[in-house]
Each structure stands twice: as structure tokens, then as C-alpha cells.
Image 1 (cartoon, helix red, strand yellow):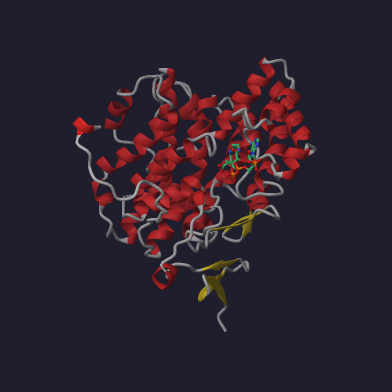
Image 2 (cartoon, protein in one colour):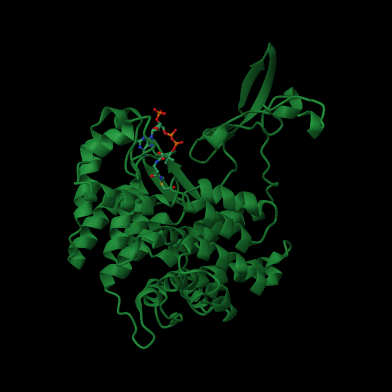
Length: 428
Ligand code: CMC
């Protein structure tokens, strides 16, 4: 028998269907509730609202569980590769070796971008933040592939758009960095794997290929895996809601990049390093900064701490903290801000304010320290997050379109002025 929930409003009772997920999560389906009762539900920030039923990523914030398509993040981070995880997220299953080979080869052969992209890039001042450049270049793809605007494209046509985006994103990201530096652009090298190619476009010179340390490529690959999807977060919800209007894949992903940029979301990785640098420059007194974070009259927040969903620990942060130690040791890098970060974490974990509010380090707390050790500049950190999140955004966009989900359009409770007559300007 199907389960129901019962809601009573002013003595009138309504039965509503309960939806149950494969991990026994339960939700009240209120989609027809307004029609029955004239009442809507309100939940600013969607703190308790499910926007979809998705088969891509499962996370349990209380237990600190994160799985892509059922596979635990710990196993994927240890054993898989970013391209394999991308395939898993987008197509639903782990690839066979021949499927992975042809996926990787397809991506490798689409890394080149139209030369006119250089003209668009030229139009940006060198002060442009690489996230703004990245989102612009991604949406500019609609100009080079106008057929992508057609909402009735066949699955094969959609798929080639997906491959192009996965392939060109590292080129856009690295070129955004080169533009900022005023250095010559490095073209993709199809002999290199995904991460090595990206690092070469970032750090190579026109005549000298960048020889990436295997410790660097594997750390980067792991970071990308850890960021690859995170169910209905701010940027992913943005991708789905933009895509629900049947806007193109490129327009939807570009919107997701912009949503990710903010310091409360992906922009936190840049904000964490800036915060740690400030604390160091200020003499390294972590207690003083902890007090600022707890002071409600002070806008300062401990960046890289807290999460809407994780209320015990963020499993990605655990893996990244260990990776930060390993990578710095392998590369022989000594970074004093790692000690400041660890000191802050230790204090926060035993501080009543943070304990009461269940605030723990999130994925962004230690990731910036690894990016720094890899030589990636601070304002590229959120671009790195975007590079990692891309397959997740694509998978979520594809799922939403394949499920034929309706256009996203929340309601509101109006609290403004009621009906009143226009007053002529001379009488105001
Ligand atoms: N430092 C100090 N206090 C905090 C922090 C923090 N980092 N995070 C939350 N709080 C307090 C907040 O002031 C509130 O206290 P009170 O109940 O007394 O009003 C309580 O904890 C709950 O916070 P909230 O803002 O209502 O929680 P939220 O779920 O709306 O926000 C968050 C989640 C991640 C935006 C928030 O924790 C935050 O701003 N963290 C810092 C930014 C950050 O690290 N963002 C990266 C998130 S992980 C990467 C990703 O986006 O996927």
C-alpha cells in the first residue's frame, strides 16, 4: 500500500503521497497540494525542499556518506580516474576498458577551440577574474555550435555537445589564466592525458612542454574526482533550473559556473586561502579569528567551515586533508598556512559554538592548500572546482532533460503593498 502524509489546515485534512527513495529517504509530494488546499509551502534557501528525484549522487549528511551512482567516494578517489568518474556520472555505469578508451580518445580529439575564441579572450582586460572569463567562453560555444540551441536535438547530437564541453573546458580554463598573466596561449596537446594536458596549457611554454610530476597529476586527478558531483547544490540546481527552460547545455553550464563563483559556494576555496594568509599576516593568532567568527556583529565567517547538508563530517574533506599532507610531503613543499589551517580546525572541533552548530571543515578547507602546492594561483581555485564539477553538472542537466522535468518556477508569499492608486508626480 502506498504511504501517505496527512496535513491538517484549520480543521480540514489533506492526504498527500509520500515518495520514498532507494535509500529510504522520504518526501511529501506537495506538487498538487495548492490545487487541493489553496496553500503553498515556503522554504527560503530550499533547506527542506527536494527539487527532483535523481539517480546520480547519494549523500547522507548525518553519516558523512557520499556516493556517485552507488559507488563510495572513498573508493572512487583511491581507485578511479577523473575521466572514468565522468563517464560513470554521465552515462550511469562504470565503463568497460574499450568504452573508457573511446571516451578518452573522443575527448582528446575535441580539445582544440575555434581560433575566434582568441578574439573574445583578447577583449577581456587582464584584470578579469578567470571565473568570469570561463563562464563567458562556455556560453560563447552557442555561437560556434548554433545547432546546440535546438531543444529537440537527438541523443547523438546532445552527446557530441557533451564531449565538446568536457574536452574544451580545460583549454578555456588554462587560457583564462594565460590571459590574466599576459602570457602566450598554449594549444592543447592530444598526446597528453586530461590532467597533463591541462597542466601543460597552464604552465608550459610555446617551445617547451611542461613535464608534470606524477604526484601533481595524480593529486589533481583526485581533486577533480572529489568535486565531480554533489547532488542538488546551488550551482547544480542553477544548471537544472536554467536547463529546464530548454536553454542549451552551454548556457546552462555557464550559469552553473557563475553560481559556483560565490564565496559561500565554490568561491570558498579562494576565500579560505585569503583568510589563512590574512591570519598569518596578522601574526597567526587563531584564537582572535575564532572569536571574530563567533561574533554575530562581525561579518567574518570561518571560510571552509560549515555545510548545508553535512552535519558530522564532510567525507571529501577527510580525503583532502590526508592528500594535502601527502602531496606537500611528496613535493617537498613546506606551507606555513597548512599549520594555521590545522590549528583552526583543532580549535573549532572543540569549540562549543562550532560543536553546537555542527560546523566542520568542508571540501574547500584544505583543497586550496593542495592547489597552491601544485603551483595553481589563488584566483584559479574556483576554476579548478568548476573543472571538477563539470561532469556532475552535465549528468544532472542530461537527467533533467531525459526525465522531461517541467520548467522550474517557484512560488512566493507576497508581503508588499496591497492595491493602491497611482499618485501623480506633482502630488508626491
Ligand atoms: N563560520 C561561523 N559561523 C558559521 C559558519 C562559519 N563558516 N557557517 C555557519 N555558521 C553559523 C551561522 O552563523 C548560523 O549560526 P546561528 O544559528 O547562530 O545563526 C549557523 O552556523 C547555521 O549557518 P547557516 O548560514 O544558517 O547555514 P547554511 O546551511 O545556510 O549555510 C554555508 C551553509 C556553507 C553557506 C555556511 O556554513 C558558510 O557560510 N560557510 C562558509 C563558506 C563555505 O565554506 N562555503 C563552502 C561550502 S562547501 C563547498 C560547496 O559549496 O559545495
